[in-house]
Image (cartoon, rainbow, N blue to C red):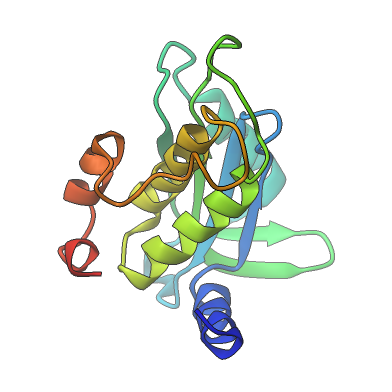
Length: 172
């Protein structure tokens, strides 16, 4: 992949999401806000994005070990100093890796970003994209080194995400 292709993919990613944040060191949660130009479905009242994010994080099932995604539905989201956008907030959770299985987190963030870019190019919806990227990063953390643990698309641990995603995923 050359420099210009990376720039093009980055431009696609920026156009797809308004905000993306994650913390892979703690493997707790990540969030994405997807803009929705149709304000017809949004509530008339603005919702603070930080408060909504906290509410969605409380909805996650602490007994579930695999990555998940929780959606806010379309709302008018506001943030101090940024303004208001009509969109959907997605909070994704990462796998809780037992200490005995955690080998090396080097490259986990790069794996997450790479999987996110792959998912965007494959037209995966955020509900699948976030858990998919978290799963790729979690798989990577079970091997030593920045590259050795990165899974291939054919890895059986990714099969459920690829089947659930769009048909273009299999063609990429």
